Image (cartoon, rainbow over all chains, first blue to last red; front, top):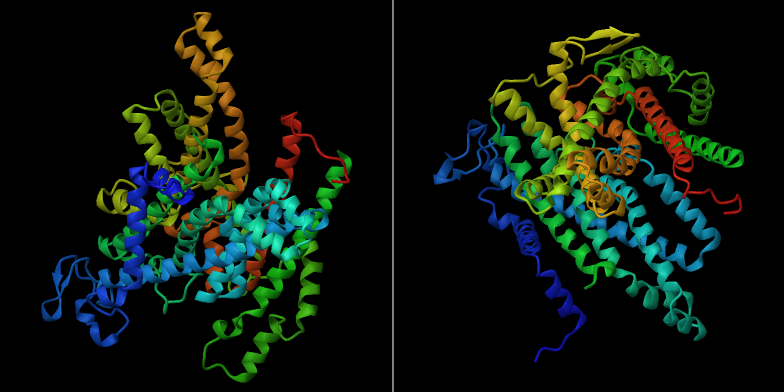
Length: 292
Length: 325
């Protein structure tokens, strides 16, 4: 007989939705592709020796040197689009996940502090959250990037500043409820240090909603990075994420050379939809109000 | 109420001031626009002259002080590139952005509400499921990529609609508007649809959720029991009640539509404020960047304030806490 652990129950409930499982599988696949891009890609798109300018803007399925086939066509510099997408996935996913992790850490700590200490700390932090969420993320990101300039580190900083407020709000809401429970009372009576109470007792009980927010925000971060890079204010040319690949192909779209933009766009879309599918199901499973 | 208003106004002014400081110091801290403005083989003499004309030789705090004093008089400096007042350039472009934003909002209402109602009435039908699946896609698809697809399909492959620009415009009350001419309208459709897509999905979800809730209400059962036709129950009794949340949310979203028009304007080369500022960021035209951000942030502050106030007026359940809160 199987022992019913919370993790098993969670896994069983999660797998009730076939769409969510497909999403999870896609996420795992994309992650592996991103990790092993250099091994999988038919060509190193950043090695000038591998590129031939004569192969520029070939349609999908054209033959390249040494029996290689450009399955998804090439861009202006004769770069294999498929290889560029595999490398681009790395950058897009990396930026999305890294910024989500930093924002999670920052937002969680501030949200917990606000809920635990209450009073002025809470009022001040939540006022900041309100003001920030009053402005759309693209506007905040534009302000920050016009100040910071281009670069991987800069776009991660901008995304963290855009996103921390979502985590802070989510974790504060849960923590306020948890704070009143008996185990917290017990922890306080034992005169544990604040740090121990907050991180070892309060934090673990606030994790479920955070996981949901984090999934949604990774997708959001990836889309926002792509948009900003497309606008030319995100990543520099030397770090071609999917958004930059799409931007590069944009000018050729009007002449009917659709593949330069279309395929990176499909890759971006698959990634965002897959993450959202997982996030949707997580929200259903982890939401106590929907518990059967 | 008056106390609340004053406190919010003071907060807004402080927020504006902080943003102006961040933007000014930040924007003026990056790069040197003189390098971009003059040719590489200019003499050092010329370089000094341009720097002096633009006021870039003075210390930063002096530049900021001058900026604040001038900003309060409605002067946000001259564009380095166009040699015109930045605020004038922004305001010239404003009608284009505003027209685009309003058209997108209209589309969101005209398409979103009927589709959402349909999905709410027949949640398990094929149409209902398709509509909901479509709305998930609408949330997931990045705006700029949908814009590219629209151009690819309707402008390049089918050749039905133009891909860039505003087309022919008519001047109404000093604003140039596109939607009054056939050509202008054709240019407006794709960008407006692109900008609206996200909001359409939002309205569909809100309307559907509202439908499912309201359909179960007693007064709807009563209306049916009274023998009213389904058409009358749905379009009068139900519709009126689901409109409240939809309209509130849409009001809040107006600002975000204007902010996101940056993306749509870049894709469709729509000559609005967003296009202007993206170009300005790329060529380091600092006064334009600062002026755009100040205008938009001011707009947002006003919208947020107005929404907060409207809430307390419309919904009696929302009561302002006393000043100690």
